[in-house]
Image (tube, rainbow, N blue to C red):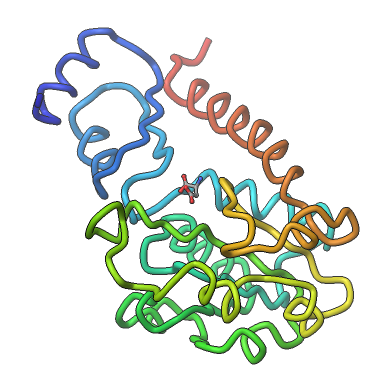
Length: 230
Ligand code: ASP
């Protein structure tokens, strides 16, 4: 029940150097950053952004492809509720990748093309000749209605048929394409187990591993910035 400003005052009284904030309200870390002395790391805010996820995804891609520039990346599924999608769109377009978003019209934000992406509603067309496929979790908890059944998708089974990544759909991508997912995965909803667990294509576990490295780097960098120079 506390206001975010009171939370900020409490946290500030602890005189911490760094604050990692994961919040269900978009913009909360930004507000806190204005009110506390600590460096604030956005660890995911509402449906807005998840910057360290984008950094770890970029690191994972670069380890395999050696670059980000010129790659075609398809971000697929529940774009509407995905902070991961937004941060990845910003990072990847900035670094020269061609970004596509693929999903049903009900899960696509209005005006998403303004972010510099191509929009597809058909998986076969959206995946054609892509280097990287980023699958997103169907975020039912954000769909409202009873138990998150807000009617944005008819059923999990139908969603899987049209938008779930299986071997058949993956065959439309480049033969050396990578499969990614920020986790947690809904197997059989947005991704088939055979694809998620394919060691030749899936880098999902490596993303998690790179997440540790990237977040260590972020903490290290920010703690140096705030510390007086010796
Ligand atoms: N783990 C990611 C996030 O924090 C993706 C998800 O929850 O679906 O946004």
